[in-house]
Length: 143
View 1 (cartoon, helix red, strand yellow):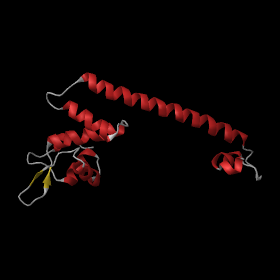
View 2 (cartoon, rainbow, N blue to C red):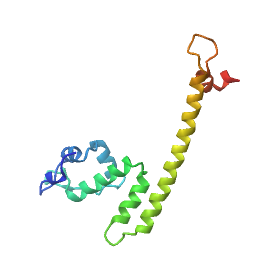
View 3 (cartoon, one colour):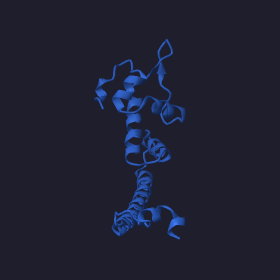
View 4 (cartoon, rainbow, N blue to C red):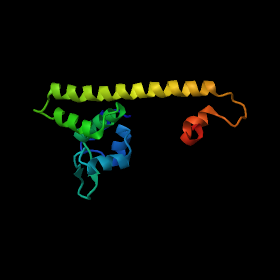
């Protein structure tokens, strides 16, 4: 990602915004369509131009997605970050719910890891008709 200070005073086109933020052009347009990103200003020729505000929002969305927040959660967080709307209590509640979800996923992955390790350990690796790994994948085979 290039420094955001590279923004021109008159804004940047979508391709440059994409390069600046490491967000795909189609994704930028999608965020506009679903109103996560405000509609940008347009040149006299009708081309979209993005300024520091749009860039900051887009980077926040990308970072939120990297942290595993849903688009609805990110939308709520962006709304809470708006001037006069900040509520650390509400932000904390969203983040705490997300943390619970992350911990549940980790627990599920740990169970999956144990099952796979146990199944692989049971597999001889030889050419035999019974394969514990295939049995786990095919319920009718295990029966």
